[in-house]
Length: 520
Image (cartoon, rainbow, N blue to C red; front, side, top):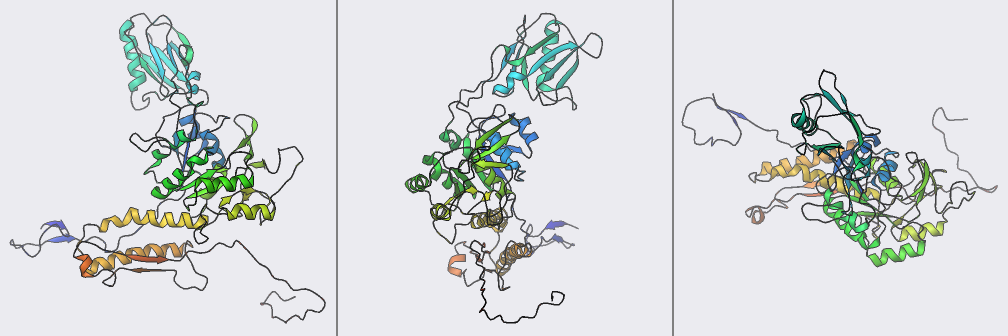
């Protein structure tokens, strides 16, 4: 009794009498929406791999992978921290350097044994190597520690002379079994040492100090190159990011490159103007840069005062992390407009914290910025006295597509279809194929409707899908083409709320009956 997959045998050419069981796959493919909360961040750090996306969920994850926040421009940790405070919890972080970065290294005194930091960066200088007596007789224990992280212990290493040093290097580089894997801090080389081991405690940077390679970093470094091995922004290709930012990259010469990358990858790029920018300069520079794209959101260069708990200081930081983190914590049909931001203690416009100044944007200021496709973080908001994004717009000049919700919802639908509809390629073109394609898309859109991502004000169905002979004539299908046409109506964002009230002693009020239970 053969059991086969449908389509794997020619059922019209069977010769042997038998029972043939065919496994028939479900007729309708179920599309599960792709994540929209993945936030890509490019910047400098004092530790960790370079040019390689690393998954980070919390600041503890970030510290383990890239070290602490550094109070300097282009710091990746600063943007991750401000985004985390808005609720973001799914990052792809890419470290960049100016190629002058170096790994900390030390030679154990009196030997040729070398320990080198696993990654470049100044954090490696804090790695401490300690050799002491092991738990068992006639053995040694090496402890590799880094402040703030769990120390690595390599115990019961025996032997003498060259045997010992080789065993020590192998333990560090290869681990000692499932409970003590290879070091995540250092790599070791015995270097042909034959001297008898003695106790020591040595800092890793004692011989050659590690460096971050951050001094020469600029906006073009964060953009990177789009050739293998990719670097900077281009390292985020294929990582599923819905939002991304280049930390503090305020150079307008690179804004359109970021927007183009966002279009090609379906990523909402969060840009920023330089600190202390003026409204008129910002408008002029945006026009000169040629930035006009729904794939990019340009934040005005009114940088924000933020309390850096790690470095115990109040710092001026770019608004990117706040805006990106809030968007990442919103459903894609939502706008960042009038949504509260956390941990902002002031801005350049409002004045230095403690200065007693309290300056806000006028309606004229906001009209100029928003009309030019520039968003801004300010206080107050329409909903009250809190910090938030004031426009909820991207950089496009087209009013039909200039909302956060257009960018994110469009990217979400497109990415989901791209991830799931490819299974129909290679199938025989039949009326059943048309039905399956249409049913799959309709089911996905219906799920979006049920979850509130789609809707209409009059209750009508806000989408339609056509995939039949009307848009697939034989002259096209004979050449291998199949086309599915969908229309999806998005929900608009209430940006201009008008409340009319007529009052006065001559007003004639039409009597209305209040609902039951509300009558006074």
